[in-house]
Image (cartoon, rainbow, N blue to C red; front, side, top):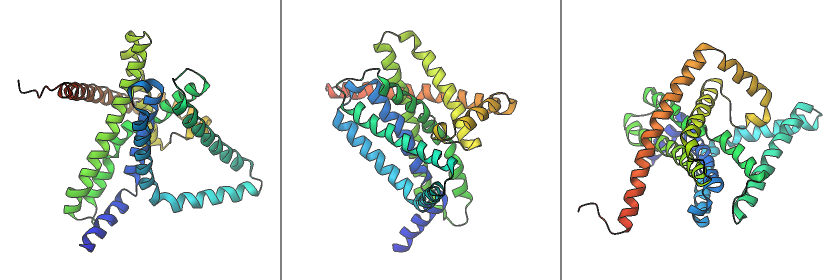
Length: 286
């Protein structure tokens, strides 16, 4: 039994190295923000806190395999900063700025009796947009599944019983986080008298996320690169949007996101309506 457990742990560590869980955690960040920014009154604050804690737990599981590497990088950054490297000090300052913004958002947005369009609200919206591509990005993690299937280190039964279900669940949850986030955005626009802009807003978000997914998968940018290296992100994005092949790939991603979003949105609405009727005593058999 111990050997079987060790085989599962070894296979997950060698193939995923925590990435599937870390990416799922990143997908949950915009979901939490969408409720805080757009639908605070529709969700109990206790549920929001519990879901945030669960998301942090998933993030911790995904981060553990990377901890030695990250710790080594941080130590190296501190040593270079103490030696007088200006660029390194700017990087550390950007990380500190991100931490302050995250702390401010968690304190102000969670404790405000209602969400106003203050400076913190707009900062939260920027973070929401920056992290939202991480949700559909999970669709591209299919490469890890293919790598696992071709790996000689992982037995077939582990691939079928562990890797495939884990991967499929992460993809489904990540994309559902994307769907609910956009539905919350649509609710906010409708609530503020901009119902006619809901569909346009969804298309704009699909386009931005298609660009973000391409930059993340092929150029290997991360959401925090917008803060740590904005100039490089801006120039690379311009180069990408002026080249034929990247634009073609981005268009394909846009179509895939649009179609999958519409399908999953209808399923989500159907499940929500079924849940509401079940609470009223309708078992659907009449």
